[in-house]
Image (tube, rainbow, N blue to C red; front, side, top):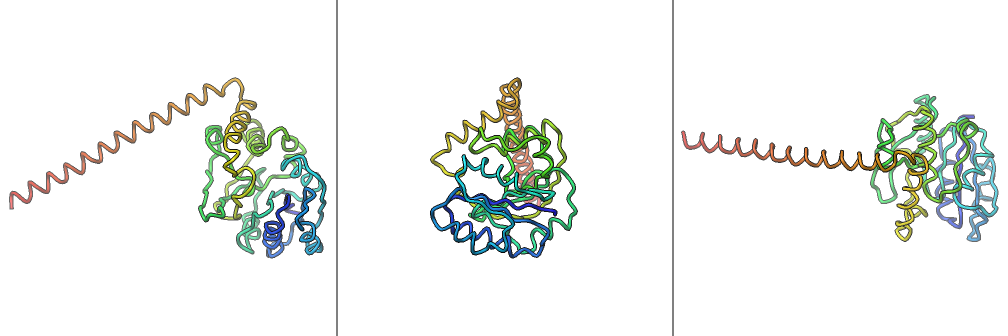
Length: 264
């Protein structure tokens, strides 16, 4: 089996139905579908039961956070790759999975571009570096993880509420140099209403992100931040000089035109 699609849900029946419908309409069929519900009380379980014949495994028990629920899904998974498509996230095209696997992915992590529900598009980098992860991350909805990674390097850390996926990228891609492959394709529509996107916890997001980076690179965090700031400053200086150079060229062209007009 190529793929285990793992969906985590808590009291989001409408979003869950959208996710399920985007999965069951796929033309690609070599997958299993796992739903981990956090004992929802809003009718989510009724939605799951409606699609029971399309779902490989589901359970509804209290979970200690989103990564605890995702880990429960990993434990049930049997596919070569795991894909975390949480409640209200949707695969955009019905042939989306078929297109991805037509590329014959073989790397440890395979990732794609993502479209947000506000229609903005996020294009990920083809090259992943420590600097990249210091500045941003990859939405886990747009990544396929080889299931064997979780056997080798462990499950998601449940110490973090929001950035355990960043922690996992640092542990696997940066520290262990696991292989990765970028496929420039919009696979998933990412729901912006999730916990990690709520403005009310923005301060906590920043604090936890900093903690993940410090926990993984305690001896170099401050130095690396200083280097990034220095690089940004240098780029800013270069940009200012470039702008001045362009203006000089433009003025030179304008003066040449004036001289030409006068000589006519």
